[in-house]
Amino acid sequence: MKGLLTLKSLSIDQIKQIINLAIDFKNGLKVDFTGKKMVTLFYENSTRTQYSFQMAMLNLGITPLSFNLAGSSVYKGETLYDTVRTFESLGVDGVVIRHTQDVYYKELDPIQIPIFNGGDGTSDHPTQTLLDLMTIYEEFGRYEGIKVALVGDIAHSRVAHGNAEVMKRLGMEIFVSGPEQYNDHTCPYIDLDDAVKTCDVINLLRVQFERHKEDMNITKEEYLQKYGMTTERVSRMKKNSIIMHPAPVNRGIEIESDVVECERSRIYKQMTNGVFVRMAAITMALRGELRY
Ligand code: CP
Image (cartoon, rainbow, N blue to C red; front, side, top):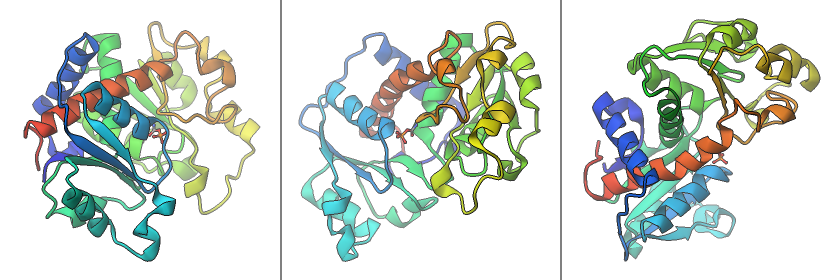
C-alpha cells in the first residue's frame, strides 16, 4: 500500500525525512502537482486535519474534493472499501481517511492509490505526531533526551498512543499524567506538578467525552485544578519548556482559557506546521517514496 498509514512501520530515518521536507516547505520550497485530485473521506468530525490536508493539497496545486458523509451512499450501506474503490475508479489520485475503527486500512489492501490516515479510532494519528515532532524539533533542535509529559485522557487518545511510540524510538523520555481512570499504563506516571517542573514539553490531551462510556467522576472545575494546565502551573514551568495540545481544546477543563495563547503555548504553531507536514507526506507518497 502507498501513503501514510502509521509511523510504526516507518524507520526513524524516514520519519526525519518527512519532517525535514516539511521544514523545507515552511522555508519556501515549491512543488507542483497540478492536475492531480485528492479526496478527504472523514467518517468522524474534524476541523484541523481535514482542512489542513486540503490546504496542503492547494499549496501543491492538487484539487481537493470533499466527501459529504451525510449525503453519501454510506447511508445505503456502502462499505469503506467500496467507497474508496469508487473514488479510485473516478480517477482520484489519493485519499485522506479518518475513521472510527482502529486500523481500518487493513481492509483497503487492494487499493493502489495512496491512502493518508487522518486518524483511526483510538489507535493512531500519524500526521498529528509528525506536526508535534516538527514543533518540538523547531523549539529544541533535537529529539534525544527531550522530556515529554502526555497529560489527560490517555486511554481514548490516538495522539497519545501514536506520539508515545515514535517519541520513545527517537530517544525522548515519555511520561503520562492525569486521572487514573484514563491511564493505560504504557509509560511511567508523573504527577502534573512534578511534570511542569521537570519536563520540556507538556503535551495536553483533550478529554474525549464522546468516547466515554461512563461519566467522569469529577466536575470540570475539579479536573482543571487537579489535572489541567492553569496559569498558576504555567508560572512554575521549567525554563524554556512549552505547552502543546492537538486541539480542539476544552477551555476550562484540561486547559485554562488564558493558557491557550500564553507565551509558552505552541498550539497554533502546531496547526501551522500541520499544513507543512501534510505537504511533505503527500509529496513523498505521490513520488512513490512512502509505501507499506
Ligand atoms: N488535532 C486534530 O486532529 O483536530 P481535528 O479533530 O479538528 O482534525
